Image (cartoon, rainbow, N blue to C red; front, side):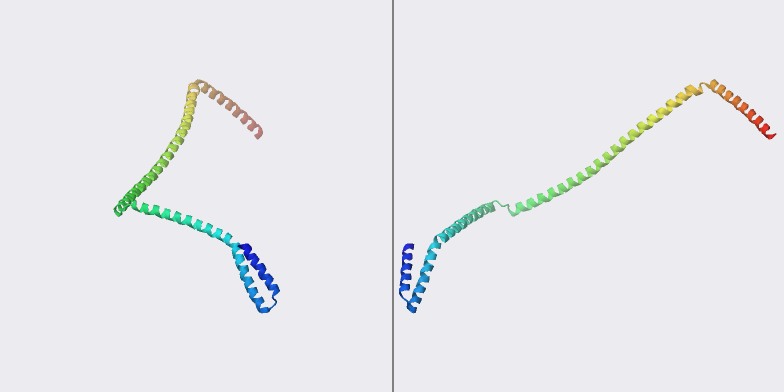
Length: 186
């Protein structure tokens, strides 16, 4: 078919060359343009046909998918709850929301209680260590006092003797200071 058009075009071109008359030339020129358009259409036809067929196939798939989706939705409508069921579900939801709020409030209160108890426990542990330190200090003090009682207060004779010796030493020092003073005064 394309070959026959090609031959026709060559014949027309040949005729155009032979005829130099302006009127006939114009007719041949118009005819030549028409033939060229037909040839262009024929060459592009197969490619455009493939593009349109691919587009139609794609749209067919989309339509099939949409029909399947709509079919599923129509089937699901039969499974939708009634108005009474919806009302019952709303009541259940409100009840469960209240229970959730109560549980959250209780959890918050319990967390505060846990924090308070933890703080109290920490204070008790700190107090325990302070008491142990103070008890250790008191025990050391008692031991020192017991040692003092055993060593100092039971040796009163020794302390008295040391006191007398110190007293005599101080008297001797006093007499020496008086002699020195009297010696300076003269």
